[in-house]
Amino acid sequence: MGTNANLETWGKPMFRKKAEARSRFSLWPKLGTIGLLTAKHALLIGGSLVMAFPFLWMFLGSLKLPDEIFSGGIWRLPSEWRWEHYAEAWKRAPFDRFFINSALVSVSTVIAQLITCSMAAYAFACVNFKAKQTLFLIFIATTMIPFESTMIPSYLVIKWLGLMNTHLAMILPSATSVFGIFLLRQFFLTIPRDLLDAAKIDGCSHAGILLRIVVPLSQTIAATLSLFAFIHAWNSYLWPLLVTNTTGMRTVQVGLRYMVDKELGTQWPQMLAASTFIILPIVLLFVFLQKYFVRGMVQSGLK
Image: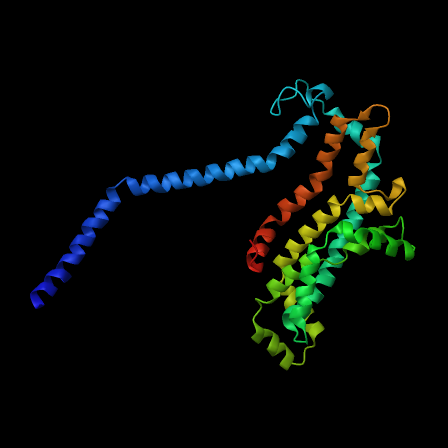
């Protein structure tokens, strides 16, 4: 037994070294790794092209002649690069006013959601009260209700309050978000309870804990929620169209209707040009908040 054990202990390092030497000089593991990375990058590039295709088509279409937009293939470059379509689209409607209205509504919606969602999420995550889980499940269940089902009641409430054709009418229905509450709650649950308990022992109230401890620790997830809220408010079309009736109160999405001529029909080059410069604020905001967005999604546990 002793001899066999000695042979095994003596032989194992030798066999291990030979196996390591074979794996070091073998090409198959390296080729497999290179092939896997190539497949991953090809898949990511293909997915990126699919996601970016509508925007590329929109941008190229805004520079084409009207007859070229729906003919000659989707990847055909413009025969003449008509940059003047952007100036024509800007002059067809008061887009400077539309941009101001959209920015005011979107920024106000973001601020309102950060306040209301953080308070509700703190209550669901850090405060113990009766039927908390049941109430939270009811909150989550309301996400299954489509906007069209609540549109008419919301319209009647806004009309009853006398807020028609005002910025407040566009902000109030989006002042809070069930998704935002869920997103913040998931992050608040990861904050160590000992930290909150220590603040309570020191005499800090719930408002103080929220403002002094929870909010400063939630900058990344707050940036994520801000991006979602801004995009939703900026791209909203139907609700601003319902509650506003003057040109001075329209938003950029509603402003696209001005690209439709009663006699000539839809002016597609101007329509695509206006759509291109309308999404620029969202693209710039996403580029600026991208690292916070990715970090916030990871910290909240969402995929």
